[in-house]
Amino acid sequence: MVNVEDGVASLIGSLERLQRCLITLNDTDIGSAQFRVATHETLIRSEALTESVRNFVSRVLSPPELEVATAILDKHKDITITAHDIGAICIGFPGLLPHRKHRDRGFITVPLARALKKYVSEHPNFDRKTKAEVCIVHTYGRNRVHFARDHDNIEMKAVMDTIATYLLAGDSCWHINLHHYGDVGDSDYTSIYIVPPNRFLDWHLRQVNCL
Figure (tube, rainbow, N blue to C red):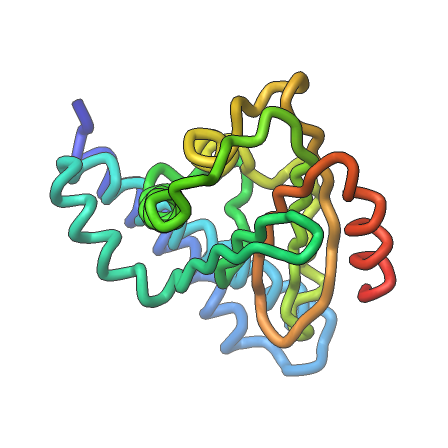
């Protein structure tokens, strides 16, 4: 059972740390090295607080209540699932996958599951892939390139479990190989491609040439 009081206290602590970062920004000269460091710290703190709030809410709400809450965010997630000419499937959504220390527990996976369920229902002849190359393209907005994270710090388990439920026979090493790519765009965006193994080289060369 979730201890609401402890959860709220933790969120308040995170908020106070973010507030201290903002005070430092306000008291520091723009253009100084200290200002840049404070800016980085503020962004990291704000992103961590957002993930913590989402995780807290997803723990305290019942499944039906969580479904309603995540529906509110669906318009912001704007998840797309499209088929490509080489037999690949692309799952795309605004934003970046969470840091592994701030694991998503519903605010990405619930709308993702809804979108995948809809896609499968609209393609009744779709067969789960027994083997696939899973390629994740992390696109960073031009003003956030310096916040690019190490790939081993990105939380993938919850997302891959959800995708495997609808599109794959499994997500073990016997069924998929996982590849990470970095890119730069107008805004943060994540694209996850499910690529047939015999077309992976074609996809890879096309992706690399676009970087």
